[in-house]
Image (cartoon, rainbow, N blue to C red):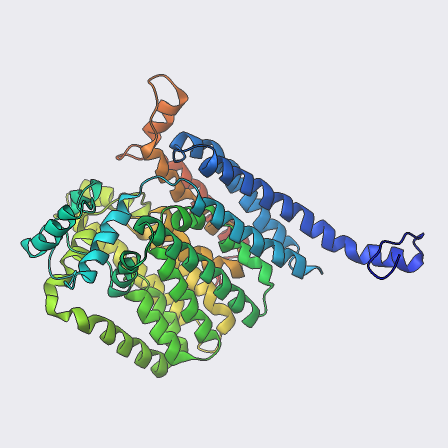
Amino acid sequence: MGSRGISFRMPDRKDHQEDHTRAPRLSGLLPLAGSGAVLAALYVWLYHSGSTPPTVQDRVIAYPVIFAIYLFSVWWIWHLREQPGRRPRFAAVILASVALHAIVLSGVAPKNPDLDRHLWEGRVLVAGHNPYAAAPEAPIYDDLRAQLEAEGDDLWSGYWLKHKQIRSVYGPVSTALWAVPHLLPINRVCALRIIMTLCSLGTVALLVALLTTLGHPRALVIVYAWSPVCINGFADRGQIDAAMVLLVVLAALLVARGRFAWAGIAMAAAVLTKLWPLLLALPMLRMGGRRFAAGFGLAVLAGVLPFAGAGPEALEGLGAFADRWHANDSVFTLVLMAAEALHVPQAARVARSIVALLAVAYTVWRTWRLEPDDVGGLPGVLAGISAAVIILSPVTYPWYAAPMIAFLCFAPVAWMLALSLAPMLWYLRFLKGDPGTVWAALARWGDKPPQLWRLPAYAVVYLMAAVRWVQRGGPRPSS
């Protein structure tokens, strides 16, 4: 029939040998493709089955299945990591990741009041104000509020005004990103979600490059690329952590390639997005030395100087967050209960100081254990420090786990994966149900306080961690 036609012939012995070589590729790919297809169907059901956002009840039904398929897929890739046929599996991981992000991004997402506050700060910057000079309710913004009212713009409204007396708790990079949607000719909330989705997919690309640099199979990027925590936090909610994680992973990649000054600049940009990645800078500083420190210091200075006119009071918002916020935590509540039982004066501040010191101490210990030339050990250290922050922080929203998830691509430890998923039970606090129904019973588990889900959820995580610790004979630098 010609070169483009279809011919039929009986297979010979060579064909049988080729079939055997193809078998591992097919056996590895088909379960993965099936998992991706089921995940896509579940997200379509959640975000495209009507004109309203997915309810919390819908999430309670869908997410246990999503979690199970995600964990199976991660296990499957890890199980097959040394077998042939990596390229088809890697392609399936990337295509499915793009599809899952796109399905959620293009669907009907629930309103996220965080984005209104973020967009306000971006609008303040576009208007030529210093967003760190005063809280949103300050008279300095009267002209801007009058302008918004005259334009029929509802930005100065909604739930976010509950915290209008608190200054910004984010850095200049965040504020600059929040200004971008106001310069685009599309809906600003949609624009912000698009930006954060692109940041999340950019992180996938950087993780692939880092996996390749360190000699790991690229398909292990599935740990981050398919994570329901990251897809929900970034494609749905549009949280700024997507940009922060992108910059942290970029810094790690630059460290791995010996570009220490540029790594310092990237890490400074991450810290100028949200402050807590400062802990992750310590092991990079150990590896990058003076060049990393120079790049980091100069970039921080360049980012802060344009807003320095706000003075030391610019940190009031960050101080208020550190002093007051309390949600979805684990260890902090236990420390606080102990301090209160002992009648310690200012028990809450003492408890916050204790967990902060523990986080810093653990970071210093992990950094000290890391050899300056052990590039392969860096992701494990970064994952461990990120896990410590989750465990010790007074505030653990689901998307806070994203840095840990990113560095779990290099060794997907089971208890850490469980730790990344546990805070998703935070959504139970929004669950409503008629008295006497199962939904009403579940809603009680999500009340704040006492958020009853935390005790069993975190107990399972720490039991898994203890089992691993015993099996490995104690703590290891890379675990």
